[in-house]
Length: 186
Image (cartoon, rainbow, N blue to C red; front, side):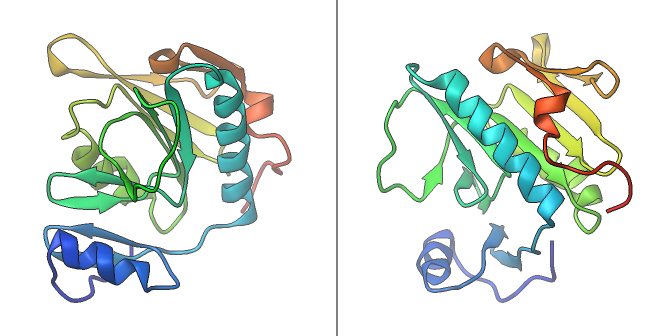
């Protein structure tokens, strides 16, 4: 996440951002320019979105990637991949208010933000059931699942060979998650 720009309301932000060539996140009046991603980052996002989309076909759930905002009570974030359920067809909405699953593919510049601050913000969404962090360089996969009494349970799925997303009842081989992505240094 970059440095904050000028203060504005949520409505002002939505109108302003429509005019911008870049994406921005917004929280409590502060606007932050989004940084660009790498080919490795984008490949994993596309792998996940396409396979999750195929899995959800015929259900009331939809998958969105990168360019759709999740709406919080005091802001907007851009998840790399998110799933929402309850509406089988997309319209002209600019935001999703009820993501069930959010996946963030980590970048060196946003790793700490995605792991701490962004997760804290996403947890304010009553609909969220699962939060996934994927480090493409280390091929590390952490899945946080909402459990009883509001506790979030971490499952490190790095060495399992399979990404298990209980919120949408999907098992996906890690080979498919990382298909077309070199291992090692970025």
